[in-house]
Image (tube, rainbow, N blue to C red; front, side, top):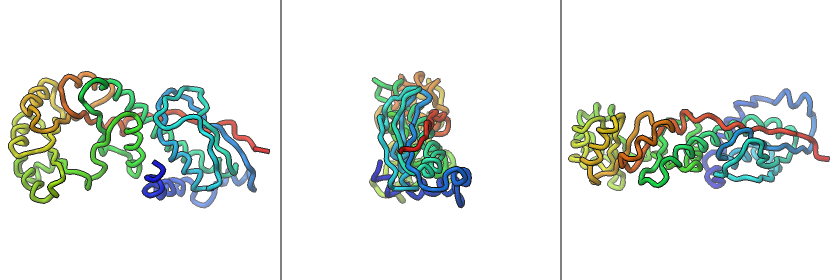
Length: 283
């Protein structure tokens, strides 16, 4: 994560800091007008899964590279309400300026990891893998998809350049499933797999005949999905999608698909409550 962050996300973190500090932190500068070394505790206020600790740290490092951390937990750990996760030591002004931005990342990412873990455990022992989607917060995709992986899920395409997924409107634009797959094969490099979203059994047959590599069963009822999996019979990988949540995922396990994708992992996960407490000067 550290290497990925330095290459790809420092600019995103800096944008978040600039959003919060346009010229100065007037409150902090009112009460702390010069350097003073301080320490603050990172406290968990809700049971969950920790994710985003490197991003949390990087917020403070970008404000002052001399900030140090003594952590007692790491990404992927299950954490408990009341647990002290570690201490941050540095310029008190930096600890105050970076607090909200750092916590926004850590709470959001830990919330996604927690929600993902709650669904992933329901799929344990099955052949089916849990996928995220592109339904992410703008400028937060790299963080949110990382959190899904920490929680035990897998990443679908990262962006529109990452893979071919022919959805209903692409098929409408092309004129048919057959034509959409044909055009994709003509245009895309041969190493790219082609996934087709289908809504009924006739579309399943058309996608198979056209040579789709992956067939997404979108918003079908359970019985139709079972028929579709039997019809496909291993000739393509299978994915089911459409309003998948923690409440209904267990009902989908026995369908036998290779993947279940859920936009809820990133668009509906609540944050995990975390806080910086007990700030004090270090003598």
